[in-house]
Structure formats: C-alpha cells, structure tokens
Amino acid sequence: MPATTYAVSGMSCGHCEATLTKVVGTLDGVIGVEVDLGSGRVTVTTAAEPDDALIAEAVDEAGYELTGRV
Image (cartoon, rainbow, N blue to C red; front, side):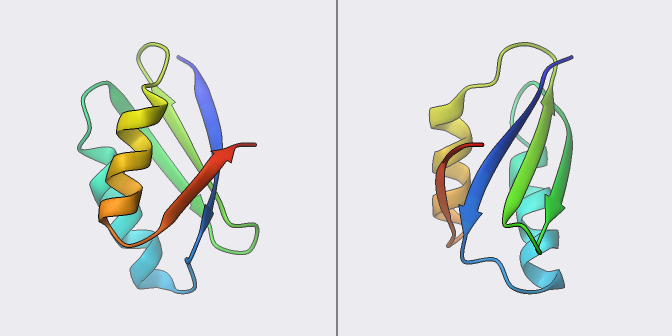
C-alpha cells in the first residue's frame, strides 16, 4: 500500500485536520489519511498508485491548497 505525502497550505487547526481527513478519506482507493498541521503535510495511504489530481481537487474544494508531493 503506497503512502504519499503532499504539501497543503491553509491548514491551521483541528477543524482543518478533521475536514481534510474526512474529504480525502472518502475518495476511492484511500485507506488512510494523516494530517500534520505543524509541517503542513498530508499523508495519504492508498490501495494502488494515488490519483494526485483527484486528491488535489478534493483538498481544493475543501478550501485548502495542495501544492504538490513532498
């Protein structure tokens, strides 16, 4: 199971963490989501190679900005 870490800007609190965990966690193929507010990183564990565009779209629609893989 690949784990991919992304840089995400705009996160600042527990609500941000909960929101991103929920929206990314509901995407097809996503097994787990870990949000690290301090570093501005979100690690996504997937069953196969992740769809970066789909993850970026979900993050952007939630009001944050995925700036790329770390």
